[in-house]
Image 1: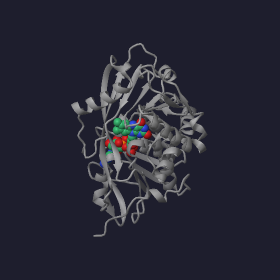
Image 2: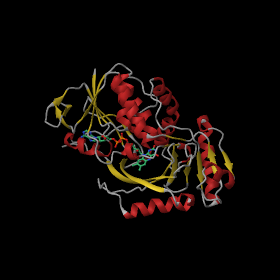
Image 3: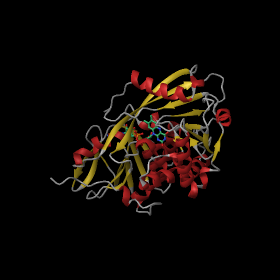
Image 4: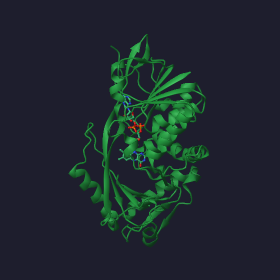
Length: 371
Ligand code: FAD
């Protein structure tokens, strides 16, 4: 069987990684659009504190986090050790005590069947400050030891490298889809067909464009995120936890004295790949309010990425009805680095006729519009 994967973000890379390990012939095509979400994503893997409630979505989110240990072990066995992955823990903080109480209750409910979250407990402002020194000194926190962060650029590249080392073909190209005899056909940039028994579209925020010629009104649009990278020269940041305040902004740190503050969530952004004054203002303002100790950090860069945002929070995973050879993995939104590796494993199972780890009915793509 020959499977063609369109899009090599975290989801396409994971799908390829899991398919080659089943002995499947794989080709991956990627255009490397500016704003590829996987290159901009923060890398937080900590589902238990979320306020969002959709049960299907949360199930995928939690399974995605749980799968990380298996994924990282599998990659390490294949020599891939540089992944920026660390179980550094997470601190949930709130300025309002009632909000922190509510978060504590929510987290306690969620971790009942998630031992991987570790021994969650409330900690004093002094302890929280000791774990993340730029933090304000008056913030109590909930400490979640199992919270993790990953460098998604390194992780996706590692999965692709393993796939290629096991025979997958990776090419850089812009491809399009058409219909031929009721099946999807993929054409390369020059209009030549790329042979495939199954086609898996993991094209991120661009998926709607590639699916439109098939008569599919795909409900995914770009949601722009601007995210700021700072450096604290000479400071050992590798063990710092992820910081999760109550809003949509957050902080995390990596090994190279790097601290990341994220991120804007700009709906109706189109593919506007610019760093804006308002974006910088919003993100820095939110970060420095919680962590004033970052005020003197060096600004390294602001990354821009387009989250594939579906109309509901749920990802879209599975076979497209009425087009026998077309499989879709999309709509990972703001949680795709957590969900992506696990979701890629499910797509590999769908393509090979295997049983998925969780039922995918609740995530099924819509079919073609009647003409
Ligand atoms: P992408 O990574 O965008 O990859 C899609 C690829 O498809 C691109 O390379 C594109 O060029 C290619 N493509 C598209 N069309 C074509 C075509 N016609 N031909 C060839 N190639 C094509 N998630 C978390 O879990 N935790 C986080 O902390 C987190 N932080 C984030 C912070 C920001 C600022 C952003 C933007 C996202 C964040 N996310 C996070 C979400 C996560 O990054 C995304 O959900 C995930 O990366 C989406 O992956 P993807 O593979 O679906 O798409």
